[in-house]
Amino acid sequence: MGIVNVTPDSFSDGGRFLDAGSAIAHARALVAEGAQIVDVGGESTRPGAEPVALEEELRRVLPVVEALAGGGLDAQISVDTYKAPVARAALDAGASLVNDVSAFRADPEMASVVAQSGADCCLMHMLGEPRTMQREGGPRYGDVVDDVRAFLEERLEFAVREGVARERIILDPGIGFGKTVEHNLELLRRLSELLTLGAPIMVGTSRKGFIGHIIAASSGREQPAGVAERLAGTLASNVLAYERGATVFRVHDVAPVREALAVAAATLGGKWTARSTGTTPGS
Image (spheres, rainbow, N blue to C red):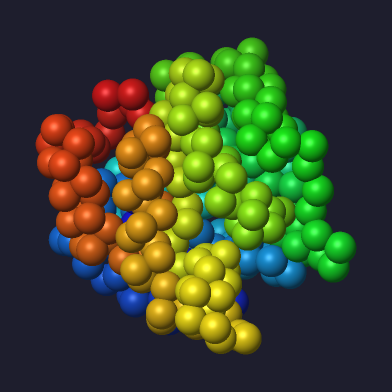
């Protein structure tokens, strides 16, 4: 899953693809690198991010989705939003996956929008909301893996009760969303425990802050490594997640991650195969 941030303030590439033309070109470039899904988002969910008005999010996202859907893109189009009106408009425009960081909690209409459309969806764990999830004092869990697993199980069953087909649901433990470095590492170490939920697992470690902290600690630096220095850590975390059962990888740098996963798959005795576009997550 290649990331297309149509935002001025995303932590990694905010402002680079804010105009529709740049975002469309970027999405096409990601598909050329091997992305099977492009995830178009008009609101940053970085720590401390402020909400974006509905009209502004629609203005950012819709032209991009419409152009990609009408241009014969050889990839599934996902919309990264927790607002039902944005999801509905994007689905009408040609998207077929809704990536909701709130796991259908932020907007009571979201589950019915997804169910009625027959779209795929991704439900993510997040402690609190972007503005508050990393506040001073830090997030706390009993056992982070058990807590995240229980949350995802509850949201999965909620979505199914609301009419979403179980086979169309992807689950995301929410690396970096209301978690410390230690929480993120524990989730990656024990990711296979989430497989018992019976849904595909997506991971989103790309260029995230915990990687910068680990790199800095390994080299005796006081400040976290910058975003541009986090590719190697992104590759390592995605390969480890693949080995532990993840099947969807949300990344900025599609080509190197795809190549790393291909080598990992070959090493483990398999072959990296592209997921067919326009199919259910389990296909």
